[in-house]
Length: 280
View 1 (spheres, one colour):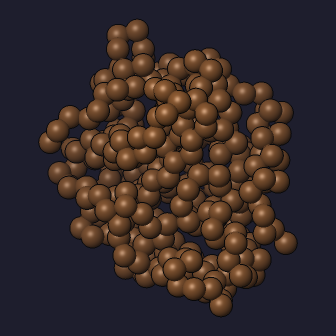
View 2 (cartoon, helix red, strand yellow):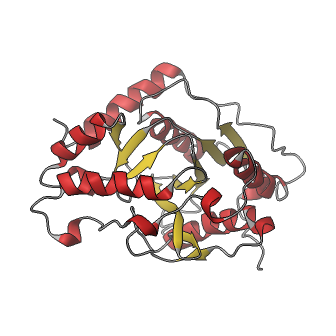
């Protein structure tokens, strides 16, 4: 196995918010990422932000423009999910406490930095190394029938467990991965399909993914993740980074910069106004 691309990891700090569940607004972690990215773009340390979020359904921009997106949202809300629209790429994904999210927040090397695939590869390599001790091979490539499909779907045995998206600012960027670690992949796929069955009526099939039950699985369904799968996976990610940090950095050290709560909530409002284009 080729080693991970170390560029950036040697100076990376880890912000572990795995158990910070006090904020239930579905856009809160995306607003936080947006502000942290601005700080990195001004010269702050690069970051790995690990987080979970309770029962939320995160739509992509293209989902919000489906003919009956309002009906899809109403149905998702009736299932007990809060709904938000993210400013990074991709389509709809459900989040819950069995999903570990990784945000790699990195500075651009220059203004013409357009190495999108290289940045996706960095996330793929990080996750692949985090799972290397399981003995399972992590594949990369679109899984037909999976929700939020893309060229950088990560899978084991033909079933997707992770999707990767990206958000780029003027001087920094965020690569975000949702990793389905625990729970039922099939139930999550059924939820997303239920949304599209209502939101995509009269839409061309090219406008939304055709989600199937057998396309998606959690890591716990695919490999042995122990008794506390989300903790086990998050610790493995942190270990990969800490092994590559230079001596003056520590995996237990976080960036001393953290936005004020009022600033984060202001960004939440900004994102909602800017991207929630089809909210009823």
